[in-house]
Amino acid sequence: MAARGKFISFEGLDGSGKSTQVEKLARSLRAHGLQVIVTREPGGTAAGEKIREVLLHSGTEGLSPFTEMALMFASRAQHVHEVILPALAEGRIVLCDRFTDSTEAYQGGGRKLGTKPVLELHRILCGNLQPDVTFLLDNEVGFSVERARRRNRNVKHKGARTEKAAEKDENRFEQENRAFFGRVRHAYLAIAVREPQRVHVINARGTPNETHAAIMGLVRKKLKI
Ligand code: TYD
Image (cartoon, rainbow, N blue to C red; front, side, top):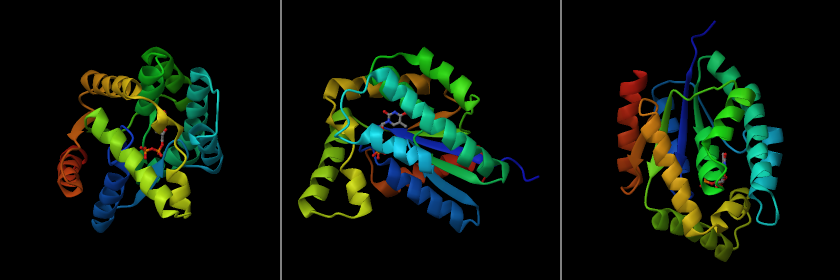
């Protein structure tokens, strides 16, 4: 059987530039001849993408914080089972745009449910699977959220109705206020302090290429690639 692959997750506030970095890392690793899959949460499977629609659509109203957390984990449990574990068993590198740290930051911190229920559900529903490395793209709240909103506004103004555009239009979380994102960032940084071996805080204020260079350096060192 092939050696276990590597599991790398990307975390950060909305508008922190994660998706760009996931794509850049995938391209670099593939150029080295490595087998890479790129996936995301919520989503990543057919069932998960349906759950994503409910969770992120701005028209979804009145979800309780516990329902929100339960849906995040429903999507994740299927994702782990159907995509992540099989890919790792085949020796692939899995790049995941958000994983359980997002639930700890957004539902645990932002929605004030706390860390404990998140870690417990992760143990019960996801076999406590941990990424080998997590990159936390960090930036001031104002900067990230403004970038996310600008992205959405531009998409709406252009009237682009591509699939990608429709997806950018949907995020219920981006309508939250500054205090919410302050709690999310605080919870993220607390995870990095608790798990310094796994979680690397990356300064996301530079250019995309600078950020990519920092990530690549760590990937080479940590994963011996
Ligand atoms: P997405 O459009 O993927 O945002 P981004 O490109 O910034 O990652 O939307 C994902 C949203 O879902 C984002 O606002 C964070 C939120 N989220 C949670 O609140 N909890 C979670 O466990 C996950 C995975 C995401």
